[in-house]
Image 1 (cartoon, rainbow, N blue to C red):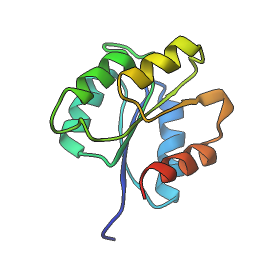
Image 2: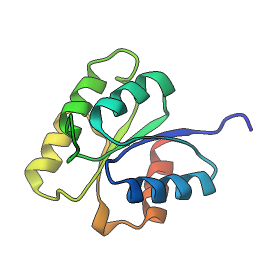
Image 3: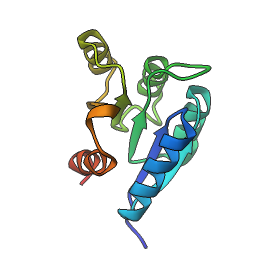
Length: 124
């Protein structure tokens, strides 16, 4: 089906990554996943997603460093990134916005359905 929006989920917890993948696929999205920051950067360059959901605390490269790299690369700099994390401190939210994220969702405060709805709000 043409026109499917592609989401890249960069999340190191396989269970969560799988849960979000299923939810987005059921909602009609194409989904790519990466389980660490380094693979996430590679996947973003290869997949050219319409939107990226990015965890912050991950092995190899944390989400802030991934975000900084994505925003400094011509291929990925315009891809909207939502940080999806359990870090809820104001300074983390501020840092994420300063680095270029369009949104900041606390995993514990958002159901997968709510995450899908928020993503829909960013990619029409």
